[in-house]
Image (tube, rainbow, N blue to C red; front, side, top):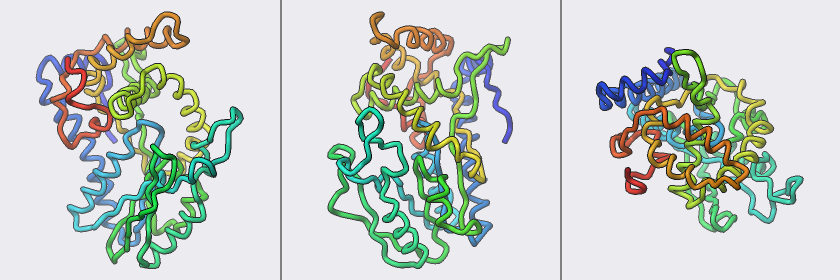
Length: 313
């Protein structure tokens, strides 16, 4: 994979010169990555199952969709299954050390059902797939059906998709595993870090939580430590199980988030435990030239984190 020109000076100059061209270059880079993976899958007729994992706000959902679209264009019908739909009902999930349901744990998933589901899929059986309702904390009474036909691909996406307990349910010759993450920092020309990888994921998370989950930035800060702890324990130890690493960084994205995220960070008051972190992040984001959210293409990964009709600049 070509190295990104991930310098704030390059980003701002590109925006000043022609933001449309810059956006197209960033989007083309990511689509090219996905298309290359799709061709690799299509060329190996043994591959039937794709496992796709990544940390919070890495862009797993859109990457799964873009991969499915690319495979469909190659004539490979693709089904996407979220491992989140295999969560146990909230009352059945083990508690963590603080007495809260530990949804980050592998044991929060119904592993027996996952095992049964994968066996049924590979045996070309009609398979009932669960649907989890995060508002009620329970699995829905209805299911959706999937039957794998010859040439079809199934993408299993979720935090635990690279865990050997799940990954090894499929023979290695019949699977491909992907790890999606923000894998580039943003520097200045003196090699000072403007934003690190976790900063970018956190900004994405703040945007998503506010615009799609009605959650304040203060609440996202409170959850972030637990989220990171879960990733450190349950995800990153298995990232080397991936056959391919996918860098979901879009160099123009902070410029798109800028006006919204600055307003949200401004809600953190001096008496907050997160005030100094928010202030530091604010100063870093101010370095970026803005781009209106309306400039983001409709098929972009960034649409996981923006809502084009809210908080217009």
